[in-house]
Length: 122
Image 1: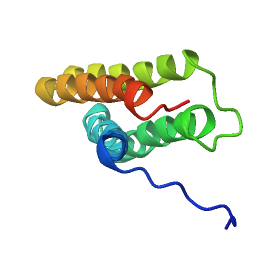
Image 2: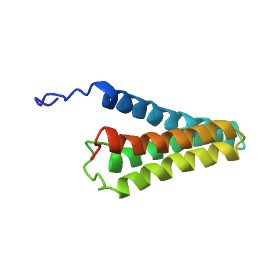
Image 3: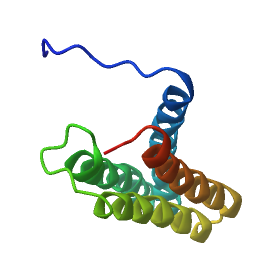
């Protein structure tokens, strides 16, 4: 634990950051769902359902998260987020969940962009 006070964001910026967190969870959930459809057997489906979100979470934690040790500067950080959400959307479309894939990609990318404008995610 740190002794630093945690800044609290209220108003519209707080709402945007809350929605951003929900899109991050949806990214992981969408990748897990897609992983269950990729495997040709139960064991491979379970491995895919665990590995896809694990890789995305690792990339997020390494390069995007506010406390990441190797946090990328803008616009590289946005491009990684864009790639993660777009990739998850494409994978969902390919496994037969087109509406979910499109909604996830559009919402995730849109909220990522909005965060940089409203919440000054820098």
